[in-house]
Length: 477
Image (tube, rainbow, N blue to C red; front, top):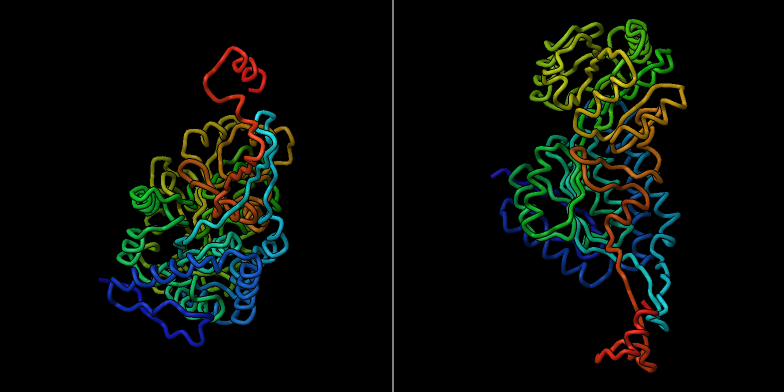
């Protein structure tokens, strides 16, 4: 049984959870320890939450080098790309949460109807309890810690399950997190499918999953057995409709598509080109050469595919159309050059499944309406992009396209704005987070009503219902 491994945890904060060994029952022991700690309400005070957010920020600042080394080992990420896409994004989330935490935690007074006065009512966010966060391999640090920021801000305890496909990052997280955060209420559990299965069989107050649709169905089924609420951050085929074939358009598309070697859930998955497709393809090639030179596979700023399985899957997609740029592959280093394709088979896996790699199909369409119909005929994506300077087309696109996010002319930029919700719709996900949206998602938004018994103003509606009482009730309600 491929369970997680245990790392020595020097000088943990507080009374740390017991180290996890190869015995499955130890998972239950760790979870029981965290739940008992959470039941003491140590995570509830604002001071505690703020201190943990500061500690998380300190970990990222002091251990940047270790995380960058791990990300390079797992995905071949350059230090610059890894820092801004994994570490800086999380630090921005932490900073945003620190500045707004008091405001988010405040209760909100609610007006009480005349029939119930005198009384006071309010809505107050309350911690849920213990949250399970299951992360993916493509951004193994950012997509583990950004949900953790929301969990900490909302006053929850949390267990993190990093992806086993990014073992170096998983190991660094397992080593460092207990050294900085309070190990009584935060833990990292490493492992593969067996570990995840055992974790999902436990009782949680919320499960936060980022990954693919197939595994999401398993998560949702397991959660449903215990009526556990879930947040599912998935993906899908995010389209980019282009009626502006300029070089800036091509650069923005190429950057968004080929960052992290195309292994980004909101990367443009395919292009619907209106107009001069030859010019667009030429400028995409120009943009790629400007970013990664004549030999992208060996460029220091260009990464690799996460595993041989995913490499082989992507190589198999290259037969689904005409390769007009790139297409070079290196099985030894798991690298595939940035690739542009056209004349693609719309029934192939290339156009039916999320690509999640450095292959960009360009599909020619005759009109803007045809592009909208193409998108509408497919499952709702996590993001939809329009590359156009026309305010009219932007307005129509926003109105008619169903997606987790609508972005004009700046694909991927929505990811770095903490005050924008991030999440899908339909097949691309359930629930959203970032900033206050994450805080609310991992809080119970609780109603509270308080009314005195010194004056019993409710006596007018008690039975028996005489003619006079019915008149009073009609007027009050």
